[in-house]
Length: 331
Image (cartoon, rainbow, N blue to C red; front, side):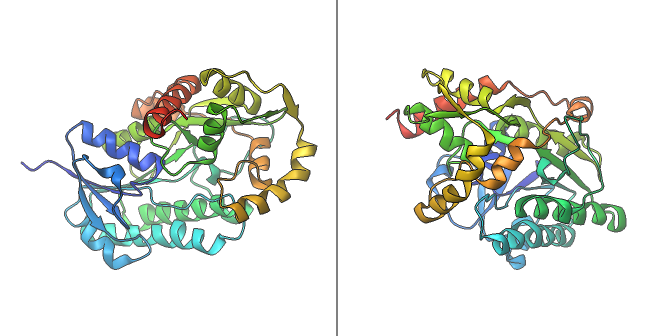
């Protein structure tokens, strides 16, 4: 009997690569859809198909014979001015993936949405899974596209009998940060002693990419079709996170903590700097609003139905720092 074939879109991404590594460790039969080859896949046992989620014809070859498709390809961009590309990849690309899954007779689709698709509840109210998303009520193009794509998949499950499970990861941290995320940039700056200030406000919910990968594999095996599962980790204040990163890096936490008023004034200027310098954005008007919004998510459903059990922020940051040192060298 042939072993199941798993296909991953977005394998060059933070979670996608972690998922690829997890599946490879189990000896699974894996195929990845990539736009171009990269050395990060050297030595990894997987089949490569070249294509793009915005090019529907390439998806048929990629999904042929697949048992499960993990759809993670997407654009995460908190800079302004890239809205059309984000909609094209995150929404239209997801529609293309669904149609290709249906044409190829794939048994199950597992889609990585985001907790950003949820409209934040007032205060610190606990937020749970829902099947009611209103993209236009959300803040930011990324959130809107993930909510719209999620709606499309849920509708296909209800009306067209699509077998799909949706997961909603929080802010991802951990190893395999090849593309340098905004959190990864912060960690690298701290490692080199160049993160001078902290913030006196805000919080967010962080999760290790390996925990998300485990959750997605469990969703493929045990998740209920048409259902969603929040895959978050630990909720921590902004200052608590910056302090944890500094301690893991063997540095003293920043003594200066700036308030939201100062950051709000500086953010528009920083956005211009990030765009002109082509550097990873840390603090933008959007990211500040996210830090101030409700990030209290329940993982009870994923714990009960998927056996989900995320690690601590400190452990994830430690592994992230160790990976960066090994991959880039401790400069």
